[in-house]
Length: 443
Image (cartoon, rainbow, N blue to C red; front, side):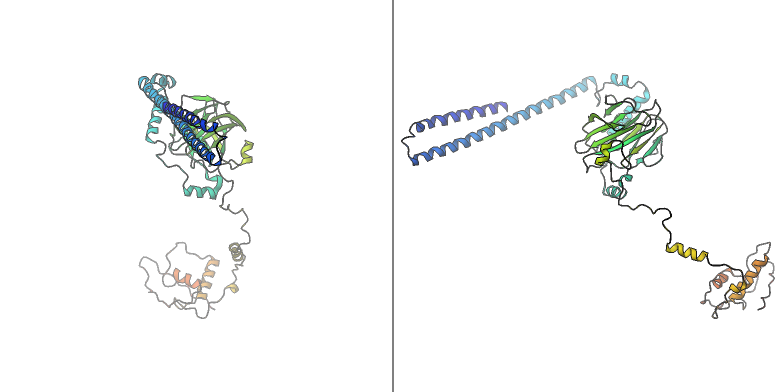
């Protein structure tokens, strides 16, 4: 391609020289030419300019193709060299040989964790699970606002969820992620994590990762993840072996903030409201806030439900969502006074309940006599007298169907007028003693 561009430049130079030489005689005779003889000279000049422009465009285009071809050849050579190097030295995806890996992973548990993590990556490559925000999740964010984000604590994680944004790790290597990913509509998103309780020998890893992520790995140790180590102040991205120190170690009570720019894939960190200059690039994925720990500790996350320590995030509103959604909050305690239901209950409770015989209203005239010629008012009067005198039988016998039918008594108490006269057999069960009937009260 470079040779073709050189030939194009030489050809343009030759044509320009030929055109110039052919125009020299006409230049010498300009005094003898009239108006009609000057027009062909102008047309020849325009044709020469068009040819020269086409030649220059072709030369530039050929040069660009030559440069692109050189870059493609260099990229292919680099890929070939890397493949040959991995094959010769038996390097893995992290560029580590088996000897170097054994040095960095001294015990069997760490080596087994590394191998299981690599197998997990092969089983769940990025894109195998759709983790973009669904219309239902977007509707949930509109309704609840920033309260829609919470941490998912699975059964295989040795942790206890104290609230939506507070988690207590009980021990061992564990990792938790949020239920929703970071949105991509705004230019910047930001959240903070406070170390509530952290022993000196326990490390927390705070960062972003895709989903699913191994529940026993630290964020930043696997592909498509980046995390900040609280004990060393270093940031790891996609590898447990390579990390760059950008800050200071964190203690209990410190707050680490993470900012993410979804359009450029840039990720940055803050410590107690002070932003670090170093950044992490290339994170153009569907990322979830992820926190890991290798021992017992606890943390509290702030996704924007309260003020940030980083002042700029408050001013520019870099939270994950609106503070308040469209869903109305529950009513305030005590705000349900003077309602229809309470007024009805109060009116019924203030009705006097007197035991005087005068308060007993007689039955309507159209009350139907059901049992043995006794009206509803007589049965109510008899029941009240038995209740006041306390004459109850020691042994609770089943009611006699002749006079003490409970269903008929309830219907009579309700004051129903649509009852049909009914007669019941006077035969008593053999196992029951004959009941002593009381004479009706004298009116």
